Amino acid sequence: MDFGRQTAFNVLLIQEYIPLGQCVKSFTVEAFSNGKWNSLGRYGAIGYKRILELPEILSDKVRLTINDARGCLALSNLQLFHAPSTVDNPVIARDKEGMVKINNKDKGPTYYYTLDGSMPTTNSKKYKGPFEALEPVLVSAIPCDSTNNRLSDPTILQLDIAKKMWKMIGHNTSYVDDTTIDDNIWTNYELSPKEIEYGLIIDLGEKQNLKGFTYTPDQSRWPSGIITHYDCYVSTNGNTWSLVIDGEFSNITNNPIKQTVRFIKPIKGRFIKLRAKGENTGQKIVVAQFGVITK
Image 1: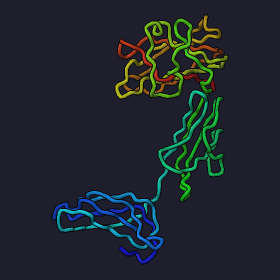
Image 2: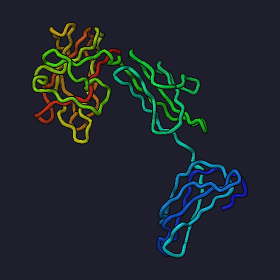
Image 3: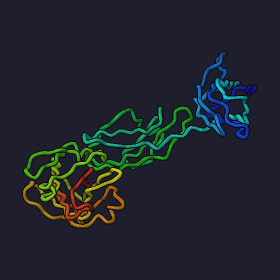
Image 4: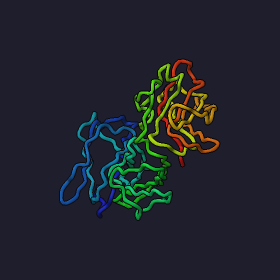
């Protein structure tokens, strides 16, 4: 196929004339550039329709070579397209140490972000790697495709205080597994019978002005141990506790997403305790993540 001029393309559509059967078993696509033929890939069967995503290239000729076939060839359609590239929304995540990462599945985009709630642009701060955010902050980020300056819609994530100083305390006052506060929703912590009786206790490391809490249940395909009814307590010393709020996570069994509970009024405390009063299986309590609201 000779275009007669330099043309950019990155998609090939090819079809066989199926009434005569499917014949092609393998083929190669080449493009002529820089004075020589360059292979764009070797592929298998074509059938009724085959759409190939190719590396973007500028060329005036394309060659299709049938390497193997069952019989006589009968191609019904061959087209080339230049599809605009797309950039997926970025993913923003922060680990327990307070380090924020911005990425997505695309290769090569440049990220720009803001921390004040404003809309990021290509004039905003450029993401060069994980950065620390220990205090509450609103992160907004966009990726930019450097080949065509194409932008995606922004991703916005409200982050509260980081969990760097947090520890989970067992019923016997010793520190235990911090799975519930590692900011990874795919890791679960199953409370022991004693912990279920006494509650899930988190030491925040220092006094905070607490305005509420968040609870993320088991995120597996078949979630279990989901808390449906709760009490929440706050303490300044880990010994004397004040009941701040109790209630129900409405419809959480059918919709096991992150739950956000706000207190009627803020309360100062270093320790916070979530105690399950009811759950959906009658057998165990599982917590994926626990957090607090200070902003």
